[in-house]
Length: 201
Image 1 (cartoon, rainbow, N blue to C red):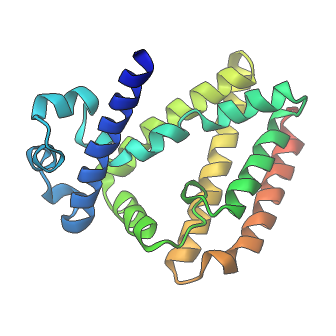
Image 2: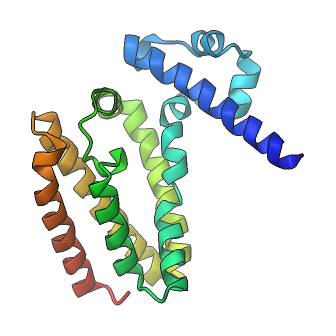
């Protein structure tokens, strides 16, 4: 029964967020009210706020699944006897090959429109850093304990973020994901080589 309840909850999150993002992309984030999102999603405002405490969270829900992604990759790699950096690099290369939007290497028009909204709206960009800080915190827990683990997670988080932004910048300027892919792979490998030079993971 709890499994069905969780599935229903997940679907409600997705339905509300999808309705919100559609409105935001159509009219702009700041031009859409929470009441309008609630009406579009066919829920009450109190229900909406139970799922999404802030308006920005409506737009950033699609990042929620990625919040602990790096930590999960590190833990899974450890079970296979693979080091943290090796596991993370392998995962990134797989996501680049799949043109995963989280890597910035995706030229789908809907994804590009979403990213323009995200990076063009100061309140969303600020809120995104809350998600990124939580992601780095859980990655640090997966790596180990203490300041050393937190420093390592911070460095890894910055590298992943900068690589993704560079991919997005090139695609936004008119290049295709396929055209950028080879350079993205080279840059990812070089970035992880540099991480290995400074981190013993």
